[in-house]
Image (cartoon, rainbow, N blue to C red):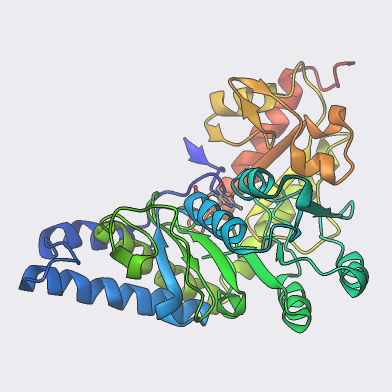
Length: 381
Ligand code: PLP
């Protein structure tokens, strides 16, 4: 089975796997224990914090280990809700991951405003600039790269805008991390991160907070992480996460992505040329090199492409939110003004660093085969 669903989760990279196994053998103490085993564990935990913070350009003292970006987002929004004035507004976009949208809606309800997104899938910076001249939200949350479309968001510009206006900036960097240079992310006020999209183990992530911010912990019942997140740290996972990120940062710096973007672009060109009606989502915007979200012709139902490709040995995603087996049009494509009939036909292909050009070509052939097997024509709605 070839995985083209790395934006969901990516196989654990060898460097991370080795580090994880070694950590379980060498660092058997609890980092909070005062004996030598504990001190050794605490030392390597600190070294991993230093390493990940250095990639982000953040102060390690401001990086709090979490179980993933979902916990980081929940922690961030409950902190904001508990500490901001009761009439404070928070702005975000309708294309955020649901781990941001759900706690933002829960805690801010009517006080949550959605920043418009253009058809290409990029947040409307002009709108933000204009609106912030008359109304100032307490915080703005804009993701770095979208998980469904791969479209890159202008987070450095949003960061500058927020800094000049004295507004807190929250950035979900989950899909950006390990695929694009992490440098500069540490200058955002709150960064949500996770490592299982780029070769780290699932269940490890972080939240960075501004210097001096006293974070209201979501998890209580222990003094770990400076009282900011209770619970024994997942030391093998954290060390493995740091190892995976180190590997990926090297690949990013070495510009390995350029070649891979070319393979993805070639796949899209051929797909569009051979399957009538196929259209790339976010084609006019800068995108992650690994992601291709394509609205494909209807076969019988929008899940057929995924099932048929699965049978041919390719794991891809429907690009639509799927609840109990019932696919609903993606909230991301809906925000990009795709009508439901098109949004529900989106298929997301997402590669990893280890994906080869030959695998992109085989995927193309598999898509063409599905199309031929279905009679090479779209089924009327
Ligand atoms: N943010 C984005 C953009 C994601 O793609 C995901 C996972 O799909 C998350 C957050 C949630 O991350 P985690 O699985 O670490 O909770």
